[in-house]
Image (cartoon, rainbow, N blue to C red; front, side):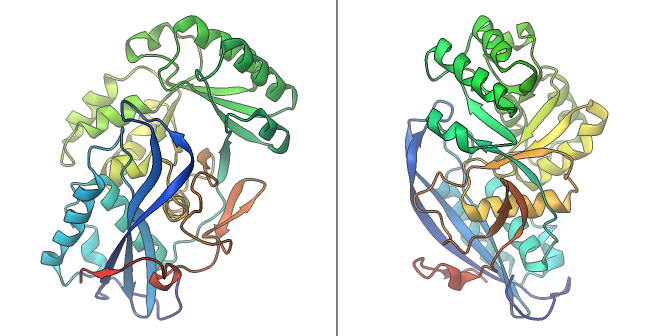
Length: 344
C-alpha cells in the first residue's frame, strides 16, 4: 500500500487500468478451451488520499463466462459512473465477476486490510523431482499419466508425511478414482471432481466441488434470489469441501457462498484460477477479511508465469509455503512496462 492519508468512505477515487500478458511456463488446459500458453488480464488501480491499491481482473478461458475484451469494455464503461467514492464501490453493479473481484481486491489493498497468515497448499508440477523439496499440504493433478505411475507417486508422497489433495478435472472413471485415493491413503484430504458429474455419486472419497460449483453459480444471474441460489446448491453432489475461485465467481456470489457454507456443512477453500501474483495478493487480502484462517487454501501457483507481474520484491510474503503477509506496496509505478489508462 502506498504512503499517504488513510482514505475515508467518502474519499473520491481515481481508477486506472492496464492490460497485461505473460507466457506460462507450461501450457494449461481448462475445460473445453484449447491449451493456453499465455495468461492475460487487466490490472485495476484505485487511488485516494495519496495511496493506491491494485487488483487484477483475469478471466480464465474454459471457466469464465466473460472474455478479457469484455472486461476492458466494462472497465471503460465505468467512466459513466464517476465520480465514485469508496462507499460507492459496494453499490456498483458488477455483472462481470473478474472485474468485480479486481475492484474488491484493489479496495482492500487501498484500505490496508490486514493480511493475517493464510495456510496454502502447493500445486505440484508433473515433474516428480519437485516432490523431494515440498512439505505440508500439496495438490496433485491426476489423470494425466499412466495410472500405475501416478499411484506410485502418491505412495511416495504419503510416505514422506505430506497431506495430499487430488484434482481429477473430471478425467477419470470411478475405478481409477478409487485406486488413486487408495494410493494416497490416510494422507488424502479430498479429491476435487475426479470424474464426470453424473458419476460423482458412485465415487466413495472425500469429495470437493470445483468445476460443478463454478458452473452452477456462474449460470445464475448476479442478482439471483436466495431461493434460486439455494436451489442451485441443493442440486449439487454432496461434498465436504467447496473450492471457491473469487476470480471466476465474483464478490456477490462468493459472499453468498460463504454465508451458505455453515448451514451446508462444508468447508470453504479459496483457490487461485492460475492468477498472477497481483491476483493472489487479492486472494490473501480477501481471505484475511473473511477470517478464513482455519482452511488451507489453494494459492500455491506462484511459479506458473514466466515472469510473473511483480519482481522478486514480491506482493506476498511466504514462509514454508504459507502466505504470512503482504510484501512491498504496489502502485501503478510498480508496473512501468504497462500502459495505464485513466477511467476516472
